[in-house]
Length: 439
Image (tube, rainbow, N blue to C red):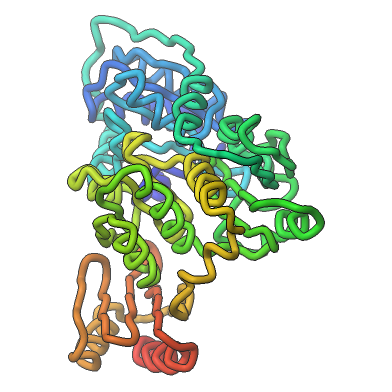
């Protein structure tokens, strides 16, 4: 069972590693760990999300917790409800982009502050395994229903500044983007793809990191006349974007464009994933923002944002975090800021991206290694002339190129991201660093 308690959430195969009985114990352990009194609970469209909710809610209420049942909602909606309802805890039942047989729980404290492996998931695991629940409560908690959809729609739409029609194609991937995307109905002209909720994902995997799954959206864009395309992952806390020609927009370029649009409204600090192009930092600063580098992982990014009271952060995985959503994700708000920029400038998305594609990136390259620590030793010994950053793994920056190498949390892998000013230099340094990693 320990395998279901991950670095950022709880996730397993329903009926095997994650059962209703385990969900009941997780509810009791969650309440024991947090001593919470009011928790919002949302769920995705997987067929087993409903029985998991029943079991989890029973565990919570047996511990005296009042449960606000949000019903079917996206993960960003659950985060919003956590803050808006002034709950002291929140749980989203989802396995995100995982295949249909998977399910799980994303856990939060008050104001959508995430609970990660290091800040509570491992404690909850120990409570579950030892059955070290608090003693019987004086009262059983209640379960009440609250539909947050209309409040969330009104809140996110309030950031729209459109002065012309925006025509988009949206790949909902049969997931919770269908609910998240209600924000955009009437605001954009929408051509929908795979817009029926189906937790078996009959058309394709709901994962925008797998670029081959963009093909239906790309083909739709090429066959029509659209401003851009949107692709939601399974629980709609991530989004991928496609330009008007059907080209996939790199997520760090999306971060730069959202930052540009946002800084028109308000100046402040914006975080960018340390794997992002140099141009992201440059765009933030060119538009009057304070650029700050973040490590990888939503729990870390949200903590850094709160400490800096940051406006926004973008992660290379397609998570976009907003101060306006309790420092949590909102995929539709990301889409609205992109549309605002198109509307304001009168340019196409590809025209906006072209001048900020200033450098050449390797993309993330994984290498299986037997000794991770020796990899970092070799890299430090070789590259002594650059600026060393150890925010997350090892980053070394030079005048004309940089790289970051991070170790996987779960596998004997290291992940390389590298960028240079020219394609020739990128290939040269990429091969050089990979040779050292794989030596």
